[in-house]
Length: 86
Image (cartoon, rainbow, N blue to C red; front, side, top):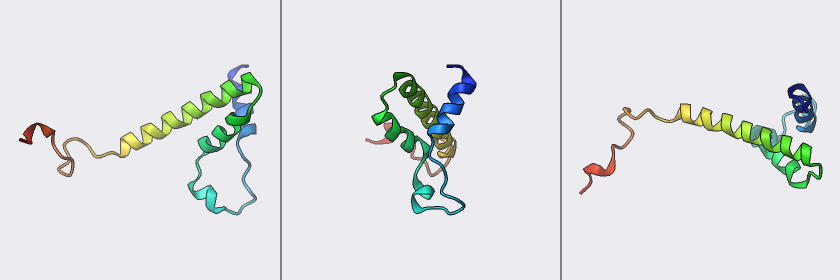
């Protein structure tokens, strides 16, 4: 399956929004969580592989976002190395 077909399949597997209303879960639930639920019951190995690849991609993106938000090492709020401790 090529890139556009894979993307189309992933978009098909992602849950649809419920009209214009935001549900409580929509505010806290991330797309990778829905994909994990689908992967847990997927029987088709090709679709399972695509789901797993998309889950990894989404989690990698999240990790990058979180890393950018972390405090910089020279920030005074960040404790220095433990080598100063006795």
